[in-house]
Length: 226
Image (cartoon, rainbow, N blue to C red; front, side):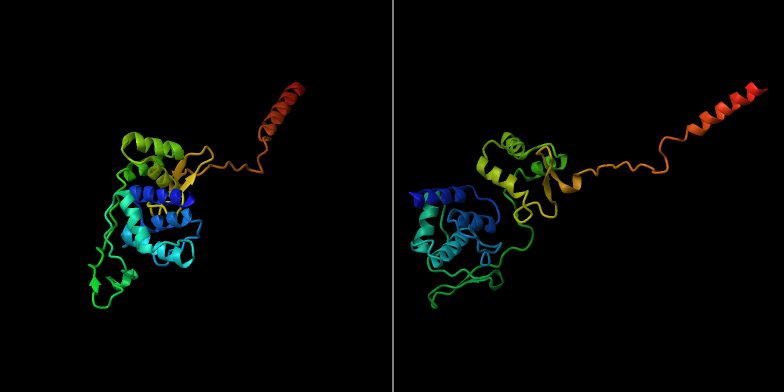
């Protein structure tokens, strides 16, 4: 029963995932109650590569007892997605820029990754940035605002995004830290206005008017004496 629930959860992840490969890998490890091992996960990996690589790690740790290739293909089949990875292919680090088959006679190469900024599928990213700059939304408020603007999105995916922006390790908004304020709203740290602190002058204790009063008394006395 637990294996079926876990499989359904992974299928759901594959259908809605639009983040970096490391996020997908971390979520799969989490479903297996296994500490994430991301050394072999690189930014140029496809979802198929990530699932197979994670499956091999889980298999080596006795957390997955099925054949890794068959397991991965079945997940993509249930998700209604194509599986574009030949069974038996070995995933190599990013610097190699090639995929080596388990059979020496059928060496395959892949095109080098396109350099430059990774294109995001988060159509709501700019909207989220504007809301975080205002600091007017809680986690739920941010999700509700995005879902209202983009009702066809998966709410679970948007909720994961709202959680990720609060963690510098997973946030897609680099170099801008998001913090939660005392009232629960989320805001960029660089948008928090510093609190002004009034520093009292220890030499001023509200006694500056006394000499004037005393002077007035002396003047009155002088006039009386005259």
